[in-house]
Length: 88
Image (cartoon, rainbow, N blue to C red; front, side, top):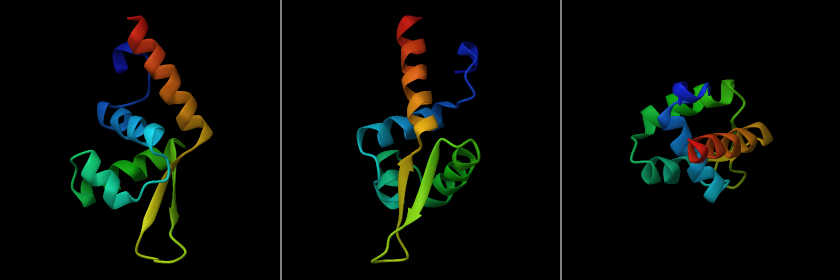
């Protein structure tokens, strides 16, 4: 994605796509869907939070579970990236 002047890695784009399809899924489910182990996904999500692409919210019923949501900036970035890729 660097070729398209986008501050996004392939792994981050995969996460944005999954969240675009199913926003608010648990971090464990996201790890399963993206074929990543929990610790590598945690590191990836930390970087994505710093870039304001996503936000994690702790489940009220079970504090061990985090749900992952796209921010409006993350949604906008996904749509822009998708358009850039399709147009090339």
